[in-house]
Image: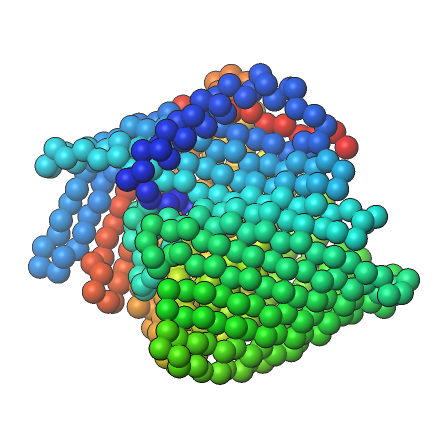
Length: 451
């Protein structure tokens, strides 16, 4: 799935995006000069033209709108390693100009998405540290929109450091601090949080480890200060075909409002995860129960693994969240095809209002190498929201993606893309269908370090 964020009102971002595209366009020749620290690195810059048709059901009538458009886009992603330092990144952006054929109005839209994480970890040193950045779309209400660029943009910066001690040959004690700060388009998205933690781990066997994690987090929003204390016993095991980990404990939160009012909350927390890993595929299933809010997550959660980034992140208050996530990636479903799947369900109980909501998310990606020069790709995702009744979907959106790509030269390709979105709502939002046909000319590069 592609995560897109709209921010059409900032020309400086548009200029930066165009500059990035130009840089990536010429990177194919320059890539040969990169050092052996590159594990994987790829990028592309594209120019495109297309047409978007939107149909809105307004009850008594149906409104239709058709907009032709032109634009540029760029993508850059990869992993770089050098000694104790590693950098993982994935960014993409689009600058698009469209015209409404009915009214003649013209508008420009800029979207950018992605995340990166730098980590320094040297087993021979006691000190480690990390830096992270992500840009994502956020929403503060229920429901969805057919165009993800309609959500607000939020940039998040995170940083942290840890200090390790070795009280025995088999034991490690690590003290760490982590901080996160978000910058949004309005006051709602401007949040910050800090976390201090201690982690004690002891190797139980050649493949198993046990430990105790304790942390305290402070978060600050516009009118609320939240402190969360957590403690958890954990156990992890490396199996012959993957891994297994489990943890359990509790969290206690204190919220202080502007007027001086305070409330206390308690929750049992924990997780269990099992993963299977082979050379061609990997599968994982994880159940997690945690207590946090959107501001606290800025320091607790580092930039995620960059597969299946969500279309948007919902801003939420202090909640106890139960979630179950299943992922599967297979690079060789057949000799010429690859597959990616995920499914997630979550129950969120607000500690402030006591309301319960349910969130669902599923998706699939399937790629076919038709010939040595042609590739076909299919993608599907579904997101749904429910209130107290888990089986009554209040808002949902289906997205389908189909693309055909033809290699024209070593680093140049031409493609045709069809994007479809279907929004259905039982709330005040109108049902919408959107169809986008796009023709894309791209130039890029791809590198893999020799190990």
